[in-house]
Length: 136
Image (cartoon, rainbow, N blue to C red; front, side, top):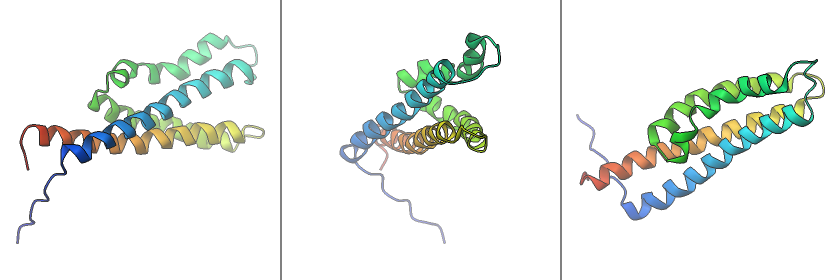
């Protein structure tokens, strides 16, 4: 017995949710960028390493996705949702280092915030595109 196809929600339902979820995803993305930048500039003990190199290595993977995030490209958000998991793992590992619990929690928190919001944005955006094409 085949499953019945669920009807797609209307655009009136989907578009506000797309906007809110994208805004929350942007907050998570910007928060992660700023927390990495701020911590490495203000608090990190780099043991004589060049801070520009350290910050560049940590931020480059996130900055690769910046043009697509700014233009709300849905597939960019999908790929960044995969990449942001590395920052979540790094945040969890940082939590176990003495004196760095707060930074690890902030990093993990912004990663989870982006990930969840991006998943909703991706889902609702693709549904909105299908509704706009005339699917029911």
